[in-house]
Amino acid sequence: MFFSTLLVHAYSLTLQSFLSFGFPLLAKLGKARDLHIDDRRRLPYPTRIFAGRSVVWLHAASLGEAKLLVRFMGILRRRHPEDLYVVTATSVSGVNYLKLCRNDSMCAIGFMPLDTVPLMTRMVDRFNITRVWLMETELWPSMMWVCSRRGIPMSIANGRVEPKSLARYHMSGALFKPLLYNVDLVLAQDEHYAERFEQLGISKERIQVVGNIKSRVSIQRPSRRRWAEFRDDMRLAESDIVVTVGCVHPGEAAHIRKAVEGVAARKMTVKWIVVPRHLDKTPAILEELGPDTLHIRDGRVPRTWNVCLVERYGVLEDMYSIADGAVLGGTFVPVGGHNVWEAAQFGIPVFFGSDYHTQQESCERLIAAGIGFSVNSGEELAERIVRTMRTEAAAFIEAQKAFVESTRRDLQVLEPLVP
Image (cartoon, rainbow, N blue to C red; front, side):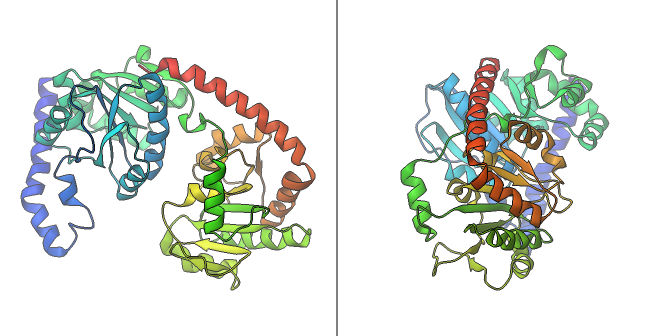
């Protein structure tokens, strides 16, 4: 541990030197504001009184992990309703999402402070942190060292270690291995990830294979009031059939255009909402969708429409919540898909292309349950949508009922594992 301590302090001093010398240069170049350096140099601001309460720190890297954090916090709140939470993220999109999800259990929300020993010490002392949960594997040396010195247990939720990360941690074994002794629980996504955590030095007894926690969702429709409000905002009637296409990349919007035409040719009227994965790719996606696509950037919808592209961050789940079906982007191009549970949580059929390798476990689970459907082209997508949502709707409803019951049992198995 002595050598690891030296390495942690050398690493911390390097970051502190950046604050002293690199920050003025970034400020001069106009980059400091974009990187939110000022926000990362200080602690998150408290939003409620937390003195005398048990405070748990939850940290996520980016937007996807921030969404997992909010979901996982729901499990923690059911287990420990008296606890409060400091929630942080590394990315701007992650922090913004956490702020949108603010609730009474959160006593502070913000960027994770720069990982220096002084800032991490102030963080755990300021909020009297009693436990730390890291989403998916965000290992920060100064944070881990300070928690170890303070005797604060650390746990990893939805743990995964990719081969490149494993190699990097092995190269830094003298730094990380002693710090990992303080990790008292890893909820790993699968056996392969569990084996990699063992290779990093975490004992098998502290690792539980629970599957992808993102898939352990409570399936439910949004409240009638919110559903009606969102539909009204989009100039949609209650009777409209809506399909939301999320996280679309250039190259696959052409498949969506084929599906739009194919569904219409089958005499089924559908309203299509398209949300890009990257907003700077909007022009290319609009070109593929065609000139009749309504393009909106703000909250104003000026006219009725059949295909609408929403160029805004942070709206995807709202758009899924008002849909009767969803299409997962990143699966008609070699990207591999995105979080399928953002749509599946609302109890609607989810359609995706054949390239879902980053979501393989989740997509195949939905396929096996009869509520997820893989297709190879826009024409196949049109045919599958019509079958599922019109001619075979009763079969989907029965499959969905069985799946809701299975997810309820999954949550009952997971929650007792959480300390």
